[in-house]
Length: 129
Figure 1: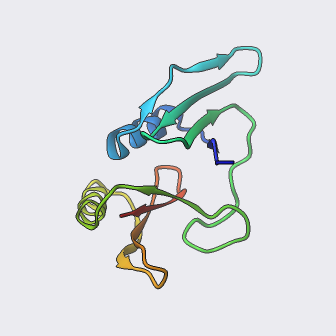
Figure 2: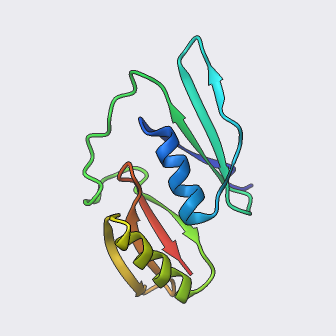
């Protein structure tokens, strides 16, 4: 078994799509649009098996969780970029471009090298080597 995709509701479908394509080299499907439900979505691929589905539809309530604090449920997902240098470079680029860094690049106790950023909607994304 494997994780096939993660899904994220957003009110910024095109902005989120552009973010992951620009910073994480994601490729995107064509938009799917269900006109009767006013639902639109994209699937983003990252040269691997797991994808992200970005979804937008009126009436979906905004999260009440504070993305800078921990809470129960899904708290983050990680994107592997391949090297410590790439983690450092991408983290610096995101910082310069105005994105919030909530975890500076570091070696973790379980052997990973990672930083944590917030995407345009405030979702936690670990950037890992």
